[in-house]
Image 1 (cartoon, rainbow, N blue to C red):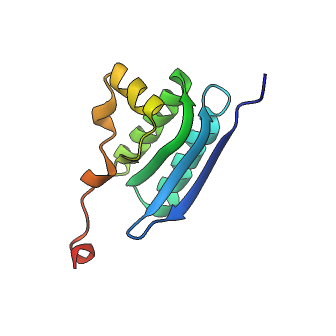
Image 2: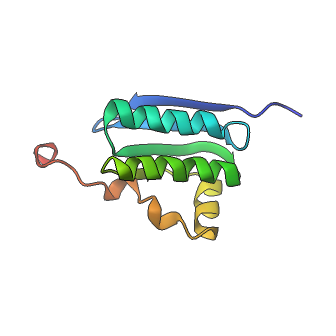
Length: 116
C-alpha cells in the first residue's frame, strides 16, 4: 500500500495569499495539515483561504485537522475560507454538518482598498 502524502504550500493568487493542500488528508498527514494551518495564521493573519481542489481523500482525522485550524483562526479573529473544495472535502463536511464553519472564499470580506 502506498504511503499517504500531503503537500501543503502557499501561493499568491491575483488578490490574495492562498494555502493549498494536495493529496491525502488522513491519520498520517493530519499533523502536517494542522501545522501548516497554524503557521499560516501566525505568519499571514487569521483569515485563511484554503484551496482543497487537489485533495483526493479526507477522513475523520483530516476533518479534525480542519477543525483545529478553524478554531485557531477563530481565536485569532478570523476564519478558514474554502476555495474550490474538492468533492470529498465538501461531502464529508456536509455529512458532518460542518460545512457552515468553512464559508466559500467568495464570501470573504475584502478590505475597502481592495475594491478600488
